[in-house]
Amino acid sequence: MKNLALLVLLVTAAPVPAGAQGLPEPGDFYLISRNADGEFVGSHKIFHRASSGLRLVTYCNREYWVRPYTVAWTQLEVENNREVRVEFNRSKGWRPICEQPEEQVTLKDLGIDIAPGEVTDDMTAPETLANRFSAIGSAFRK
Image (cartoon, rainbow, N blue to C red; front, top):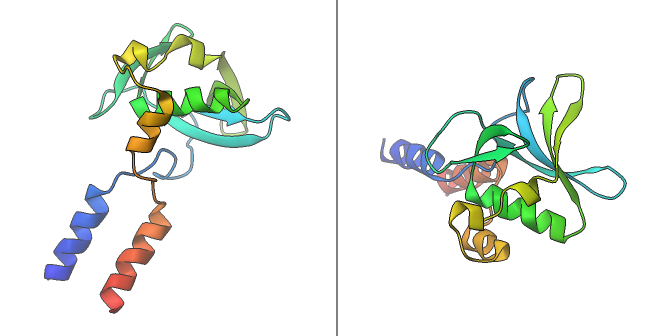
């Protein structure tokens, strides 16, 4: 029983990176990074409702809730010569709805006065759910 309690604590306490909650659903909005060829590089989900740790922002006159880490990631992606846009999942593909979000919301807009790299360095490297469950399972096999 003690091991079960530990498992529940580990699974619920560890942060879950955006996109790890499951596959994008129709109607979801994401900040999506693409390279010069238009190929997908990475993404962060953005939300329409407030939740713990999220901040209210506006991209192209629409309000969203994002993590400060997401804003820092957006700025770093642009610094690495990638294009970031707000895109909408319409179930048969992605529809770009807002260009250059990095110019519309910065860390300074959120009251954070440190470099984007420092924000992302402060976060531990997010584990995927598969890696997390694998590590937990290994602990129980010992």
